[in-house]
Amino acid sequence: MFNSRPPGTASMPHPAASAVPRDTRAWQLQVWISFGIAVFLCATGLAWLPGERLEQAFMVMGYVFCLSAAFVLAKFVRDQQSTRRSAGDTPMWKLVVWGGFAVAMGLTGWGLLGMAINVTYKAFLGVSWLYLITTAFTLAKMLRDRHEADLAEARLSVHAAIERERERDAA
Image (cartoon, rainbow, N blue to C red; front, side, top):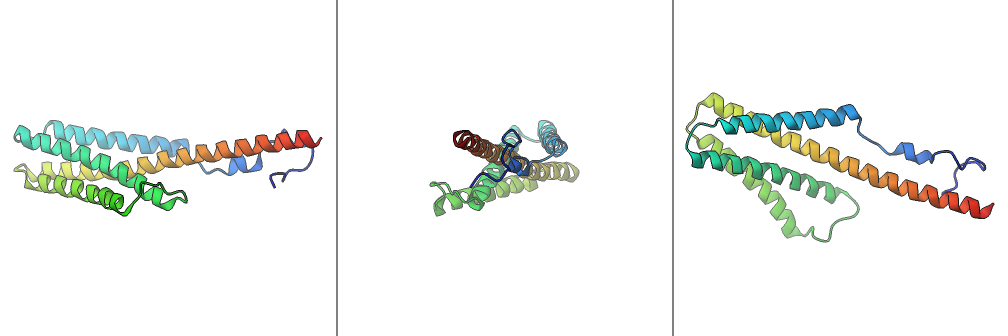
């Protein structure tokens, strides 16, 4: 089953090892830089947010809530696409994940629109907030892709070791 190489080529790398798709280092760097810029822009906007302390605290909590909800939603959607579904992915969990994301985005947007601040400042906060959410989804996907590639390579490595052992036993 695993013996697809000609005899005498046991020291060659496993042919499927190079077939594991991986993101390029340039893409990974771009994703991390984009996420860092988004966090920096949001932090800058929130640090100098005019208004009362309660409004400032509400917006910080809203941004953090949205960010964590985006990562949870990205993981949930990816888990639903995989063949190995977690035992905890019940219909109620689906409602919690999607509902939490909707509530986080809705309340944060409502708070941002309702603040008595300059419309240009609102636009800056809104765009940086949406940039943060989109880069969070991209970062979550990249990290999950890397994890799955690492698992695939580990499985291929185990299969290659088993194949080498069988070849030694057969010789």
